[in-house]
Image (tube, helix red, strand yellow):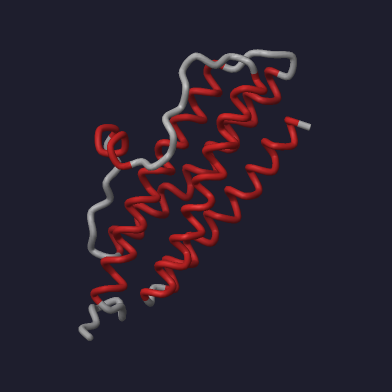
Length: 157
């Protein structure tokens, strides 16, 4: 089994790059959906929800950057153009006709649950391929997504 300069097998590196780009597309789509919700939310708790969306997006975007940079570390190409993300994201398209805070929160929560599930699968795939560092990156992204999902779902009680 060939090992590259980073101490990873070629399979581990290729698996990690593929998983990173796949989750990068989903994370970028989710980030755009959260911004759509932020711009269009209305309701009794407007300012709290409006600001929460921005906070959640900022935390997600930190992981977006880490995923893209990890692709570069592994000698890959991070793919994050709007056109490529629109084709590659596996998340359900975000509706553009929502205005009520509760409807936006439910729609974002649905996508965050889906994103979290896929990130957890990426943890397993990269760990099994032999890239513990990428698995660790996904673990951090998963923890953040789970916590933010909890924050958002708490508004639905």
